Image 1: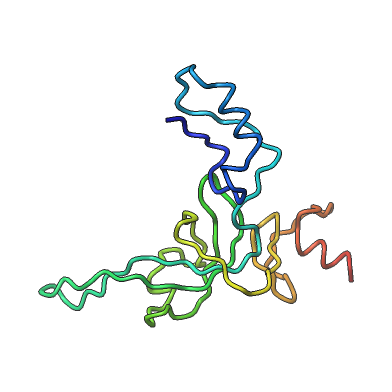
Image 2: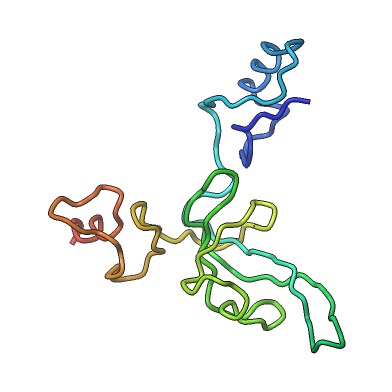
Length: 165
């Protein structure tokens, strides 16, 4: 079986992809087990700014004598970027579906984390603006955005907003 690394987290249906079909036919019979290629048709499942829910298994441990049960808990989040086969997200600072605070569970103090696509599910909410330079999720003033220097970077959300003002 061959692994097609470029197709990881692709939004397109693999069975209908002409690029993938052409590569399969080209390498058939050559005993190749992994292929990485540049696909012009690839589209990530989630884009920067998409609103999602992230689900992790949480142990409801009460004390040392009672080990507790593992169960899924869900938090809302915003996709910041795609990083390899995973997605960087910013989890909202709210309680989960079972009232566990995000800050009590997530090790990162700023609530950014990297997760696989299998833990994410898209929400029916409008997209949020995400800075392409520093990854900050858009607020009204963008004062925390990482724009520095005399020449504004065209990816920076703060520079975009200041140029429009």
